[in-house]
Each structure stands twice: as C-alpha cells, then as structure tokens.
Image 1 (tube, rainbow, N blue to C red):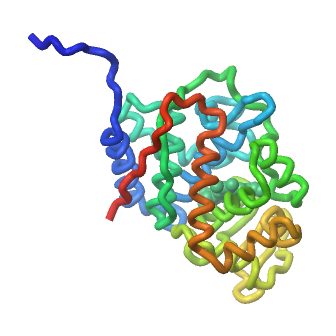
Image 2: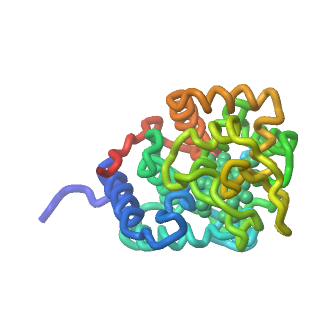
Length: 285
Ligand code: HEM
C-alpha cells in the first residue's frame, strides 16, 4: 500500500465551508418555526455560549460548550436554547470531527450572514470541556435592569460602551417568548433580517410601558406590536450609549462593520487558538 502518514483528520477551510453550507441549507429548509427561521435563536446560542466570559479569571466563554450540561443549561437566561442546540445536532452527527463549541459559534456566524448581515470571519480551535467547567449563574445580562448593569456585565467580558451598543443591535433579530424569558414580541417587523432597525426604532419611535401582567417592557406608540426591553431602553437613557445608538440608526454601514468586529471578538473570548487566520465563509444564494 499507501505510504502516506495516517494522522488524525485535519479539517481545512473547505471542510468548515461544508459545515457552514449544511447549517445554511437546514436554516432554509426548516421554516416552520417562529417567524420562519431558526437563525435568531442560533445567534442567541452563540452569544450565550460566549457571554459567560470573565476576563479576570479567564473562565467561561465559548471554549467548552458547557451549556450542554446542567446546571448551565438550566440557568434562567438560557431558557429556550435547547431548541438551538437540538437544531445543530444533525450537523454534529454529519460532521462528528467538529467540536460543539466550534459548531455553536459557527452556527451564530452562519445565521448572521444568512440573515443578510455582515460577514463574520471565524476560526476553529475550541475544545469541548466537561461539566466541571460550567460557569456560575448570573454572568449573562438581566433584561429588567438598567445601564449600570449592562456596563457591569459587558465590561466583565472586556467590552467598551461602543462595543456594548453594537452587540445589542443583534436585537434586530428574533423575538421574546413568554415561556422563555417572560417578555413578549419582536423588536421590529423583519425579525429574520439583520438590519439597523433596532437602533432606528429606538430613536424614532415613541416607546411607552406595555399594559399587561407580565414583566415591565415597552411598546411602540405607532402600532403597539413591537417591543423594547428595559435594558434596551437603557441605551437611549445613557449619554455614553446614546451617541452610538444615534450613529448606528443613521449609518447602517458603520453598524455592520462595527458589529462584525465585536461579534468576532465575542465568539473568541477566552479561546486558546493555535491559528491567527480566520475563514471568510461564502454566504448561500
Ligand atoms: C433575545 C435579553 C444582548 C441576541 C433576547 C431575549 C431577552 C434578551 C430577554 C428574549 C429571549 C426569549 O424570550 O426567547 C438580552 C439582554 C442583553 C442582550 C438583557 C444585554 C443587555 C444580546 C446580544 C446578542 C443578543 C449581545 C447577540 C449579539 C439575541 C437574539 C435574540 C435575543 C438574536 C432572539 C432570540 C430568538 O428569537 O429566539 N435577549 N439580550 N442579545 N437576544 Fe438578547
């Protein structure tokens, strides 16, 4: 026979593009969910997997995919994310060489691009860890709180004001579910498209407190069908945040560019990469 060395399978960019394409195809096929796409909940999975990072201790972050395990899977903030993890299981079965932590972050990057968002350059190298690496509850933000809490939580990850505002612009996508967070409704009328609508509506709409028995949230005066969380409203109450909200509301290109940079950073927090190079995946037709 063959005298070529038989080492472990080392995937190339083309192999990861195949994973990307398979996720994208599944997103296009599985439209019988929410507003027609699992994309938003995939973005939320990638963010909650990464947003546990603590820069002081170097713990948490996307490396490990510890949300597979209780107690982390049962943390209140992660309610509903089993939907996203289950959506990616057939992909993991088809490409068993990819780690869950690489797959969940790649799922988020794919979902942003497939929703007509910016390109999200991505690199592999995360390793799955066991239940002992689960992070304590309380590291993800609480939507009922104000700007002080938002700053506390996101500065623990190492982000500045501008980056915090850009990241929360992902609330262009998806909706709140009463059986997950207790909040209800979408932030805008095109929740499967990545746009700067979140910022435009924050600035241009008049928001009033919703009259209902649920948690405090805000509703738009024009239609009464859209929503903002108290933590979203904090972005226009705070001067340091508001200047970026106003900038992104006017300048979609600036939002796309700055969101891409900060989402890449989020997905890489605490990951001991062995490679500098990031892959740019081709978006499907
Ligand atoms: C949904 C809170 C930041 C992406 C939600 C929901 C809440 C929430 C309560 C509704 C969950 C449900 O009921 O299904 C917050 C708070 C944040 C924050 C308090 C910061 C202060 C972010 C960031 C991203 C993000 C940084 C991504 C970069 C999303 C997406 C959804 C969502 C895409 C929609 C999920 C779906 O449609 O199922 N968020 N979030 N959020 N969040 Fe955030």
